[in-house]
Amino acid sequence: MGCHPTRCNEFSPDPDQYFEGLRMKIRENPDKVIALGECGLDYDRLHFCEKDTQKKYFEKQLGLAAEFRLPLFLHCRSAHADFMEILERNRDKLLECGGGVVHSFDGTLAEAEKVIAYGGLYIGLNGCSLKTSENLEVVKELPNECIMLETDCPWCGIRPSHAGSKFVKTKFAAVKKKEKWTAETLVDGRCEPCQISQVLEVIAGVKESDATKLAEIYYDNTLELFFNKSKN
Image 1 (cartoon, rainbow, N blue to C red):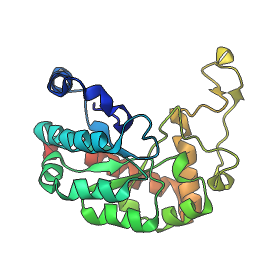
Image 2: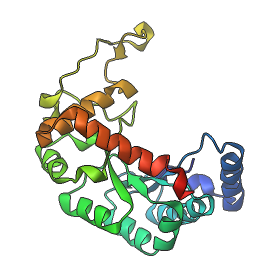
Image 3: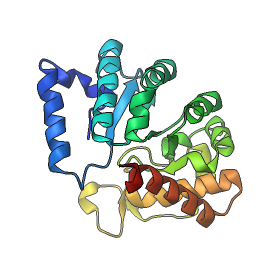
C-alpha cells in the first residue's frame, strides 16, 4: 500500500487527504497490507513526476511506514545517491518499520554494497536484474542472506536476449494472443508469477549453487522481512 514515485503527483492538490486515504486502507485491511510501497525514486521517468516531488513524498511515506510498523517495498531507478541520502536521514523510521527490500535491483555492485551496509535492507532480483553480463557479475557477489526473489509481473520477464537466459531450465508453453490464454499457458511477452522459478534458476547458475538450497534461504529472507510477527 503506497504511491509509486512516478505517480507522486497524485498527492496534489490535497496531500493530507491522500495520506488519510492510505491510512484508512491500512487500518481496514490489517491482514492484507503487509508492506508500504512501492515507494522511492525514479529518475528514468521524470516526465511523469519531477525529482523534488518524488523526494518529498518518498520521505513522507517513510513516516507512514514507521507509523504502522510496515516494512518497505522500495523502488530506485537512476537515483541511488538521493535514495540513500533520504534513507540515511530517516534511519529512525527504518528501524521502526523493520527495514525493506529494494526491488528490481539492476545497479552496480558498489550500489548494492551500500544498500546492504545500511542494514535491514534486502536486494530484490527479477528478470530486469539479470539482463546483462554486468548484472550477472553483481548477482554473483551478493550475499544470499540479502537476496529476495520476485517477478514484478507482468513486467521484467527473462527474455532470450538477456544474459541470464542461458541458465533457464524451466520452459512454459505460451500463446501470442491474450485471447487464447488458458490456465496451462503463458501469454508471450507477459511475465507471470510462476516464472519466479526461472529467476531462481538463473541465480543458481550464476552462483554455481544448488537451486533448492538457495530457494530455502531466499524464502526465509522473505518471511523474516514481511511475516516476522516478533517485529510488530
